[in-house]
Image (cartoon, rainbow, N blue to C red; front, side, top):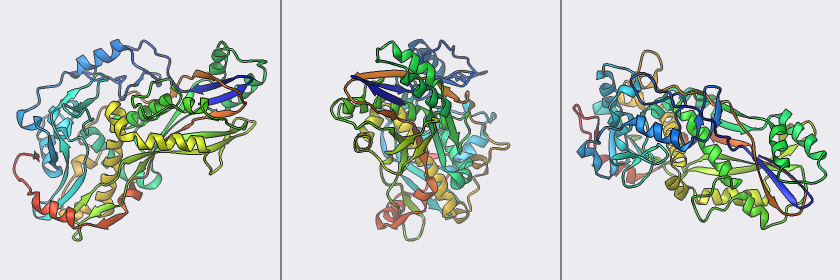
Length: 450
């Protein structure tokens, strides 16, 4: 987002979408599509990110056609367990290696809504993931969520991506960024200098000057559901900040509202926000066989950028008071926000999965358990995940608020996940050791149990 003010109007330019009538195209034999809406966004074959129309959302929901949830999976359970060893066997037993052809219970990991624990069972050569779970439904935006809680379920395809990108995450992290181009910023500044005064009609000129904003992804396949979650979460955060989407949480004002209530000194210093992983040290048993993932998982962060004459931005290492206040409000309300908008819960889920994948590697849990997870971890001749259209650009759209002053604002940023950092910090915990001792491993054909 960019903004500049003259006279009495502050113009805020953000990355919301102009909706295009992109039809939903089904893949053979399944109800999913390369352009399928994920997290309240849809990506067409050109890589342009849009909001889906109501018709597109309905078509996508109708195409998903969930099977009835088995009775023993319906009930809410605080610690549902999934055996990775037996899950892999269940996948291998399926004739098709397309993830779309697997039973819903496998695709949605028995309805687990957040993985809180990792238990290692050397005697059974197994690693078990555990967390709250229940039956699932499709919500109004097309996300698969818990029947009573409304929280998004953890997806098998996101788990596979987390495992298969664990080494890339170690080398450079996992990130998403949506930013104006330097050329767009320069055109914007040139355009704005020619305006004697602002009117709402000038907004079209600003959007044209800025042009399309670029989507940059690193650490995960651009065509994966995991990547779409990163893009969608960043998109919705900025839409809320600029009041282009009404905040679903009463306590979270938009940044635009904050601007109206305060005075901002004229400057070419501009705030940038992003969502980052936020974990407390893992709770770890003294024998290294039990772990608890602790902390909210996600926080909003901010830093000021200096916009130079040629349109390039340079981080200053500092944050503005107002931008920091909005980031703090976003963080404080994240739990409630994730209940209202599933994409923020999905973001936390993929962050959790990346931390778990890093933990398995960092602490050598596969070797400790002598547990073969080659089908889950290798992208070779194993289960194939969905491939969606890769996100490339987002159209610029403007918003404005009447207020005195003259300044420039940017809200570039995105999502940054440092899973190995989270996996490398732990504290000894007797509680998690006792919890594992009371959580008996169930061998046999069942890959999950309560």
